[in-house]
Structures are given as C-alpha cells and as structure tokens.
Length: 240
Image 1 (cartoon, rainbow, N blue to C red):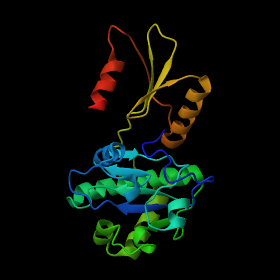
Image 2: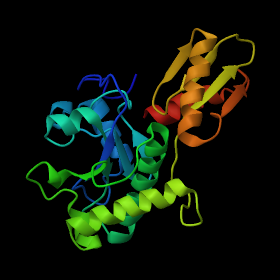
Image 3: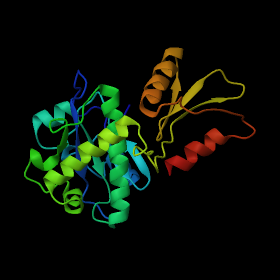
Image 4: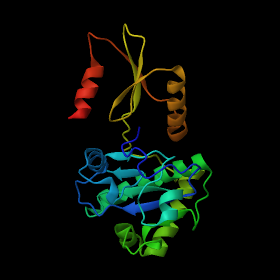
C-alpha cells in the first residue's frame, strides 16, 4: 500500500496528464522529508499532497498512479491528473533545477506508460486552475508561466524521444528490491519504506512488471543468509 493509502479515492481509469508543482520548501525539505512527514502525520494528508516528490535525494512516489491526489484545488485536476512536487524550491537555484529535471524525467516516464502526448492540455501548472503562484520558482527561473509550460512540454517530449538530450534521471535512488533468506521459502518485497512478505508467485510477477514498466529493468533481487543478516540491517537502517 502507498503512503497515502488511496485517501483521495481511486480514479478507475488512466490519468490524462500531469500537474507539476513547486513545494515552497527550504533547502533541506527534500523528497524524503515530505514522504516521512506524510507517513508520520507531520503533514496532514487533508491539507494536500502530490503523487510524487522530486528532491536532491531522488524521486519518491507516495501515492499509486491508480489513485487520486489532493494537489491542485480543482476536482478535475485532482481526479484525472498525476502530480509531482519539485522540492526545495526556496533553496538554491542549482539544487532546484536538478530536482526539476528529475520531476520532468518522472513525468516523461508516466507519459510513455499511459500514452500521454505532452501538450498544453496534458502538462499543467497549478496556477492555471487555482489562485496560487505555484510553481513559483520554475516560473521565476524560466521567464514566466507561459515560457515555463512551453519548456516543460519541450523537455518532456525530448526525454520521451530517447535522443541525446534525454539524459538519465540522475539522483534517482529507489530503494525497492526483492529478497530471500537462505533456508526459507518466502520472498520479501521492500518498497523503500516497509517490508512485505509475498504470499503468491503472481504478487512477485505483477510488482516486477510494474517496476520494469517504470524503470526499464527488472527489480533488484538479493539472496541473504542468517549468518550475514543484511535483511535485518536493511530494515534497521531505513526505519530510524
């Protein structure tokens, strides 16, 4: 289950586009900060959240694509569009622009996955539908709202084309993996936050298929022993 747990409802169909936001957060409010705040209740879900957060620590998705998110203050946008926050938008420009590129890489992946053509109707800014300056830093750095939207559409299209300009999602640090423990028959799935014991082979199959569709490769898989209990260290190191 995602961090946000489908609290905003299920869409029941594929998304039609993507809203790109700025978080109005300081230099240290990266993707992990927002994910932890949403999971712990430090940031009330009822006050709004996006599907994913792009920071200097990579991209963290906190709500499943199939679910809605309360991200733009408009029913149609919340229901039919995916959303991503570019984090640390009140910090230094270099960090922010790197985070923005990660958000555009994520957006390009989602467009390819759902057959979304980047254009004026599918790539949206928060301020188009709500009285807000968001995405304030992108608008400031790219020369206004219209120029920002044009840049987003152009860059996402470049990435989707797979050309030399596409680059890679630098800094993406997904911690997802499968693992087994020597002497046991079970397979475990670590989703980046929690460990789930899989109870049916089809669970492994579908999780890996979704991961491969999003990342272009199989999910990493490890075989650990009780003598070298790295599975315990994984849980300890990521749960503090």
